[in-house]
Image 1 (tube, one colour):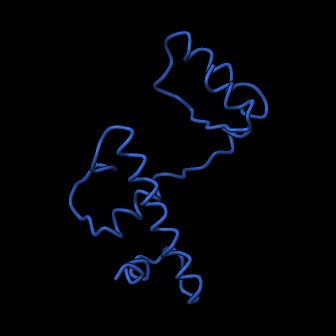
Image 2 (cartoon, rainbow, N blue to C red; image 1 turned 90 degrees about the horizontal axis):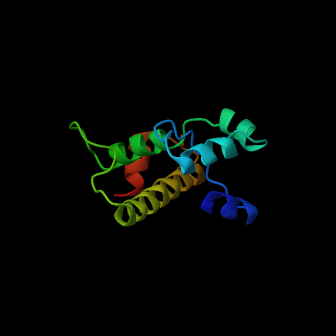
Image 3 (tube, rainbow, N blue to C red; image 1 turned 90 degrees about the vertical axis):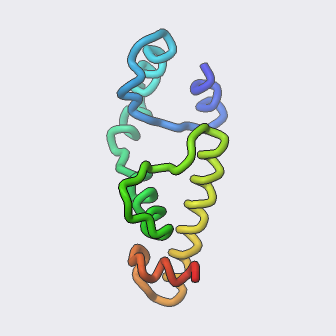
Length: 113
């Protein structure tokens, strides 16, 4: 119901919900994402968050075996993701201003030094 209420307000967050299969809310959500245009959007979805996590780990200089997020719980993770995305976007803008490659990590690191 919450997802439908958000959709009626023009806010849609689509995930494949592959692990969320059982229960009436899961079934309702899977019916929801089977509708058009959501089905089309989900099919055309590309990997988005994994490259961001990769950039975070490189910008932070993490070289050991690590989890995607160093902290747990939604309220803490939201802040980490927002700040991380903001930092990477700022560094990409700086790279663009100086005509440097967007994803070249050494250039991203110079934006933070």
